[in-house]
Structures are given as structure tokens and as C-alpha cells.
Amino acid sequence: MKKNNKGFTLAELLIVVAIIGVLIAIAMPTFTKQLERSREAADIANLRAAYGEATAAYLSGTDSPPRVTLDKDKNTVTVTGLNFSQSGELEIFKAEGTSKLPFDGITADAATAPNSSKKTATFTFVEDGTVSCTLS
Image: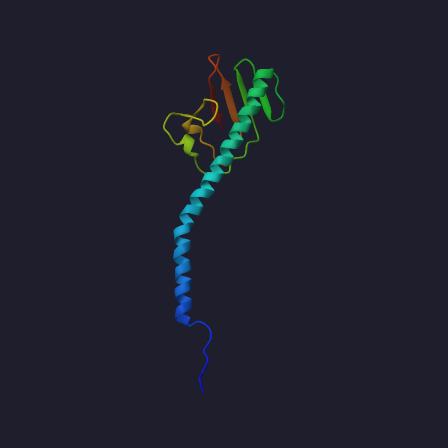
């Protein structure tokens, strides 16, 4: 009488589990890097939206409380209520000194790198057309 053994042996199952573990170990750094990039893109988009609000307030000469406050004497516009997803610095702020933001030629001090506790952006508009940003 012939015995019909169907199924997988324990050794075969362990090999499959080991292969899946190796594949996950290879893919995890890539996934983490992409997740960090998406968070950074969201933070840049939030900063870009704040700049848009600040520019509108500066050009119209009016603010829109409570989020946007215009100080005509200092040529500054403060935008509050920002939300940054990063717990650390954005890549664009990691350079020493002043970094150029990836939109509209705005500069920002590297010391003002956003983290989750910073909720306010102050944009200073200079007569020569340049804009600087400080986060607090």
C-alpha cells in the first residue's frame, strides 16, 4: 500500500519564512525613505500655502485674523496654525546659514527648521523683491 503524503515539510516552511524575512529586510529601508520624503513634501506644501497666504495679505494690505497678521511698519506677515509632520529638520533647512526654499526664491534661516512644535511662519518682504522666512 502506497502512502500519499501531501503538504509541506517543516523545513520547507521555514525556508519560505526565511526568504520572506530577507525580502522584508531589503524593502524596509526603501519604504522608510519614501515615507520620509512624503512627509517632507507635505511640510513643503504647508509652507508654500503659508507663503501664498502671506503674499496675498502683503499685496492686498489687509490681514485675515486669526491666522494671518500683517505688520505694515516692518513689512512682515505672520501666518499661524501651521502643522509640520516632521519631528526633525527638512532637508532644505539642513544646510548651514541661509537656505533657499524650493519655491519662489524665498530664503529661510537654517536655524528655523520646522518640527512638530513650530506653528508660526513670519515672512519678511524686502523692497528689492526678496522674501525671508522665520519659523517659530
